[in-house]
Length: 424
Image (cartoon, rainbow, N blue to C red; front, side, top):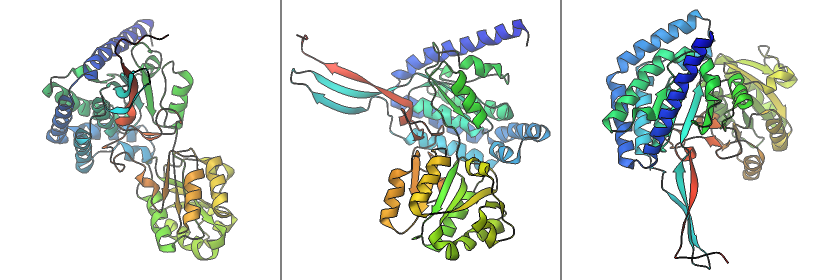
């Protein structure tokens, strides 16, 4: 890139950032009804322009296939009428959420008469860097708006045309509610230098949220001068305990892996209590194999079916995002906890059991943002949690953890009311 082009892009990104900062000041005090109106109007626009969005998406998919994008990522990228309707429905769900801004979280009085309240406020300007999923454009824009934040969206080059078509609908919603269009801005270039510039704009951007592969997230965490809310990766586990109902375990394990293999909540490792290896291991492995899933197993898993290939040490640490799963026997619930905490990504992990004590031990001691009992890891989704949508599943321990919805895109401030008190 020439120096002139670099300078032009830097100037454009600064302009976008300054416009977002100005819009954030308007949104900070915008009436909840105005934000709701904008979200509903955007949903209507997406439904009205569904055919145009699908045409734009076909262009993205064709380019991605020509460029050799992996099949799971093409699946994430692809839109059809059902998926476009899901995007619009998610905006309607976000519009129906209570507005978090201004919520009083706590209030108390001091002996000196001071009245102190802790109140939710927007974060300000949020930069969101994501890869091939165009629905993130609407989810992220809608959630930021609901929480009173302006956002700068840098979608993946693979979803460039789809994201632009969706962003146009969001802008239509903002106009309908008389809110600044700069409240939701899509970076208008595929140039990867724009990502680097966003990471060095602390005056214009308050938080960066990366949503994508491990290399993207690691780059953002390494280079950013802006605070980062990270979603690292989804190396998720299902543990079938010795007290598990076999029919339930088969149903949960198969769904957790195969419902949709390309999502971050897909199970990548199946752990089985050695106590039930004779009764449970073969049917669990056979279900997966018969569904078209490649199984990489330890010696016990290999022994139940010749189609099982040996698992490498690397497999226990891998987010496959494909029809591949690693299978291993463990020594009871403690063995499962030790394996998950060592090899997992602190994203989502599930136990299947009828033993209440084992369940509580797993739920308490597994160090992940989401832990489940007798349920598929594919429920790791803000929409399934009643949040309308999500920007991602945070594996952070600070600020927000698990699904990041509108409420998680706020901070708080203290409002202190007095009657002339001075400190002695």
